[in-house]
Image (cartoon, rainbow, N blue to C red):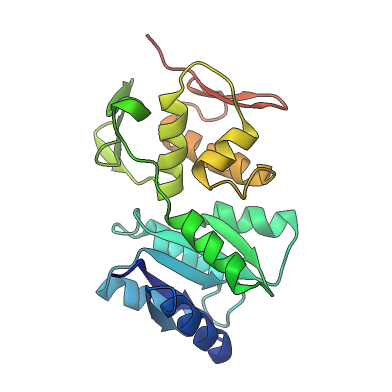
Amino acid sequence: MSAGRILVVDDDPQIRRVMRTSLAGHSYEVTDARAGEEALDRLRRDSFDLVLLDLNMPGMGGLETCRSIRSAHSSHDLAIIMLTVRNTERDKVDALDAGADDYVTKPFSMPELLARVRAALRRIPAGPENGPDSIALGEVEIDFASRQAKVHGNAVHLTPKEFDLLSYLVAHPNRIITHRELLQAIWGPDYGDELEYLRVFVNRLRKKIEPDPAHPRFLLTEAWTGYRFCLPD
């Protein structure tokens, strides 16, 4: 039984071959592409659960490819992990802001990559025990059961991790949730110090659901501590 369908996008044939073999050995179905343009073509023709995307490629680079994937109508259930030799906070923020769910620095070990893949594919289930099935915040309607959101009646695409983060916050309304709790709930127990992840994802969520993202009403920052979702009575 397949553990998930993965598209590996890298211009280095040796890296593609190693990842294809290793991932297939852990029950993933793997397809590869040599460039961003080829990856977009494959995504138009087939469905995948996750894309492993190299940041530094000739032609359409990783950031542009990631943005193009996220802007596609059918890509909102797709997880993306960016792979790169760069390791500054600015590089991480750029990758996450482009729409990546996670970021792995080369060289990496296969156990590390497999752990990141599992984290990217994990989902918080919707249901009464995890918060409401749906909420309405003024002109914003969010259906957690179907993982769909609308603003002024128009569909707004949230990435899998954006939905999971919002679901967790809404399931624990009106209380402070620490950075570490959020990171471990959404990405897994190996996370806890990646504060740039939360900054980027919260900013992306605010742009999608807040009437005035610069002055949020619902998704509030608790300085030095975490975040709080203010759910009106």
